[in-house]
Image (cartoon, rainbow, N blue to C red):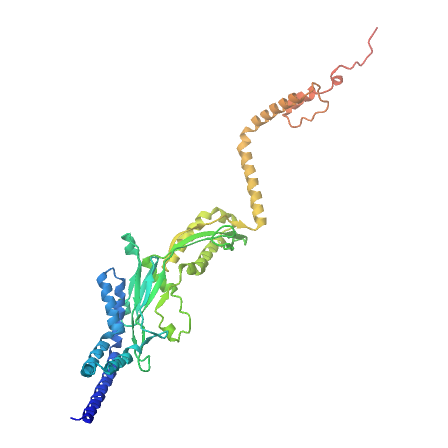
Length: 427
């Protein structure tokens, strides 16, 4: 066989193998399309095993996600078929290296042209879950009510261990998302709930309380008198209630246009913080309950029922927050009630007058004794300051009547006490 015939046979062989490779690639695309839903479901379920307290579960999860997500069975089959098609030319022309380059080109076209959103090739997307966080992984499709999983810290807490774990978000090709090759997208979403406890002192004064702003609660009594109160409160989200909390208050929406792929396929969502909820909905509910208690009472009744009012508020707040996955740790008054200044002055005057009446009632049985003591003290004071001469004009109105008459006669001038002759003496 001459060189021209050999060359012709060689070209025909290359064309046949190229055609076979193209058919294999097309079949790979169709097979990948048909198996894509299964790959999404399986990789999502495999990802949830990362939350388990098991080394074996982690290994199964890691390889399972990669096998059914990034590489997958179809690609491995395609790789084997391509190697079988080109193994002979590779062996015969290994020195020239062109066949290996062709094979690499085919692999490059089938694998590296797949991108994750944000214009990146498929990459490992890892997040670290902190001890104060609860995490949920929810697969995008299938029976995700059963396949979703949760990671929290309660079991670790019981064992005196710290709960923290790295989680890898699985990816898989999204069928029909690309022109020549599909894009990689997450097969599920990781939702993180921050369980950091919350506490506040909602006060009026700037030098105390949580904030230097006026955060007191202005209310009115049933007479329409202004009453301002201050509240101290603390709440938390228990791990068992994280799902209920998430249901009521949701997550922070991703920033951007929700019709864009980078927003549609965001991998991680963060629940609204307890601080955000309590500074908004929580504070509003407490304000309502506090003022409802005061508007149903007069000013005097509100002052007298301060303890009962707080007991009622605590009961109502506990039930309200519990229904939304929040635990009320404590609530109470953070300061005294305050009123408009004229009202406060009137209250002070009435209190002082009332105290004077109480003192008078208490001393009433001892009036005679007090008067006797006062008389004796007055005499001692007079004696200690007297120069031996009797005063000619003394007001003794403050002494008892009997002693007043006695001393009044005692202090009269001598000319008034000596007998005055009415007839001349006889010689």
